[in-house]
Each structure stands twice: as structure tokens, then as C-alpha cells.
Amino acid sequence: MATRQPSKRLAHLSSAIFTEMAQRKQAVAKEKQVIDLGIGSPDQPPPPHLLAALVEAVQKPTVYGYPGSEGSLAFREEVAKWYQYRFSVELDPATEVHSLMGSQDGLAHLALGWADPDDVVLVPDPGYPIYAASIHLAGAEAYPLPLRAENNFLPDLTAIPEHILQRAKLMILNYPNNPVSAVATLDFFADVVQFARAHDIIVAHDLAYSEMAFDGYRPPSFLQAPGAKEVGIEFNSFSKSFNMAGCRIAYVAGNAEIIKPLAVIKSNIDYGVFEAVQTMAIAALQNDRSGAVVNPTSALYQERRDVFLQALAAVGWQIDPPKATMFIWAKVPQGWTSREFAFELLERTGVVVIPGSAFGQEGEGYVRMALVKEPDVLQEVAKRIGDSGILTER
Image 1 (cartoon, one colour):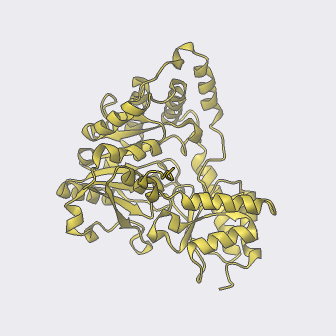
Image 2 (image 1 turned 90 degrees about the vertical axis):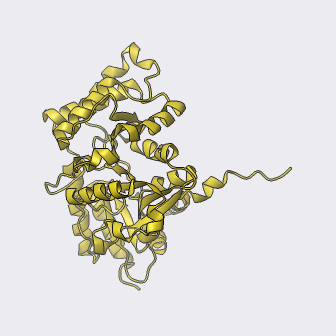
Image 3 (image 1 turned 180 degrees about the vertical axis):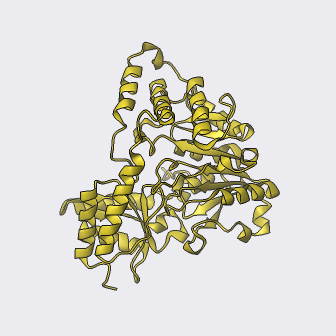
């Protein structure tokens, strides 16, 4: 019998490095205690008032039917109210908001609704892996937009060749950014709107870290830029802002006509988010708008950022502090590649970080570290790194 081969689409997916790190972690864990700063999964539970809202909701017999992929009207109305409160952006909850099973769910299916095999999609490099993966699954071509320190990790839109622009259908952006933790201004977003109009390109902005910012900084929404809703949509999530990662709830907002193809895809493959979880999400947005309960997320990660970077500086690793996200994007010491450094660090110290090359060619020379441990554990990480000698030996 002939050997069965999986779909060729899988060859373009970038899960290999994460699988390899997991395997190496298991091997190292047999000899030493491992501290995993690899995956950006919040280590805190949702606030008590949100847990209470969920507990109350799951006891209602009416929530156990198929909820509908678009999300309840109550949920979509609350998203619209929150966008007005947070960004002064008006949304029609009936047509300009759609629920998702996490923002990754929506991002994974967006290209299926908009990109054909001859189309190009512009994606950040380095970038969150689902961006490029979704394009390959749709059979389209991904064109990388280099994010480099000398340009504050913003793409140079003027450097895109004309022949690429003629085929470009969609552009994906992400600020505050994962993995590089960079931020963007409204002026940049205004330039993006003009660029998208000039070249008839749809803009999809991933705003998953909108409520995870430091030192008083408040990340803007792409939809705040004049004319943004004419050319684009925005994804946002409850995973990081409210420690609801396992609940799998998010939404896409913006241009109704751009959302429609994604909504068609979603209506064909799932029945939406559990209604009790939608009730929990509504409570999160209502409390945030009212100020009745202060969201501790930003303060918690700001403390971790400060403690960790101070401890790393003390052992000789100077890293610029990010203004947002839950990640540290750090240059590896001279003489190492990203993979070599990440693998050797794990072997010597038991600390898991992700090589920057896992996020694209431009990630080479960096590692990403997630602030998903308590401050004392992060101090222990810095001590292990310093004691290992890895920062100075090459």
C-alpha cells in the first residue's frame, strides 16, 4: 500500500520550532526545574466578579442551545458601547461587530474569505505565526513586511515593490505587537489608511494587547484613524485583557462589508461562543466602562517587566523596556543565533524562551520572553542566566 502523505499545505505551517522546544523542555525537566517563559498564556485567573458572572450564567437552562456564530446582540451591543467609551469609535452592533472563538480563530479564517491563489497578503515579519499560516492555508501568497529596530519596528510601506502592490489584497498589522512589543501612533495608522485607499488594500489590525500597556500609555485603535472604517477591520480579544484565554472569546469590528466574508466562513464551520461565556465577557466590558472594578492587568505586568529587566540588567543583559504587551523582545548576545541561544539557555538554565526566528526571518538575533511568572520567579530566571555565563562567553 502506498505511503499516505498529509496535505502539502502543512509544509508552510511554523509549529515546528514550538514542538521542538516542547520536546527539549521535557528532556531537560528530567534533570532540573524548568521555568517556561515561552508561551504567552496568562498565569492569573479572571477577576472574581467575572467568575461570579460565569457561574451565574451557566446555571441558566436557556444557555445550552446553539448560540449562533455572530454572537448575541447583547454581546455585540456591549462591544460597541466599549469601543465608544475606550476609543470614541462608533460601531453598529448589528453589522459592524462579530463574535469569534478567540482572535486567532478570526485571523485564521480571514484569508479564506478574501484571498485567492493569485492574491498577495502583506504580513509583518517578525509576526504572530497565524498570520502567514492562514494565508498559506488559503492558497494565497504572503509577502513579508520587515519590522526593524531602526524604524521602531514599523513597516516601511514605501519599500513595497509596485508589482506586489498590484496583487496585494489584504494587509495585516498588529500594534501593540507580538512578538516585538512595539507600539504605533495614530499618525502611523492615518498613513496606513491613505496607503490602503491608494492601493485598494484591506487592512486587518490585531489589537489583542489594547489593555496591556504601561507607564500610563493607552494604545490607540486603528479604527480611530480618519477613514479607517472605510478600509479596515480590527480584532480584539478577552484573553489577555481579562485573563480569559481559555474561554475562547473575541470579536472583529469595523467595515461591515469586509466582515461579511469572514462571517460566511464562520457560519459554515461553527455555532459560536457558549452564551455563558458571552455573558462573562459582557460583564468584563461593563465593569471596565463603569470603573466599578479596576482592571489589574496592566499594573501586574508592568511590575513584572520592571523587576525582570532590572534583574537582567544586573547580570549584564540590557534590554529596552516595552510600552505594552506581555513580552520582552531581547537581542541575543553577540556570536549566537536565536535558535542556538534558546536551546543552550534551556540546557544550561532550564529557562524556556522562543527564538525570534520562529516569528520570521527578521526575528533572527532576538528571543521572546513572556512575563507569565511571578516577580520572584523572574528574578530567579535572571540569576540563572547570569550564573550560566551565556551572556559573555562568545
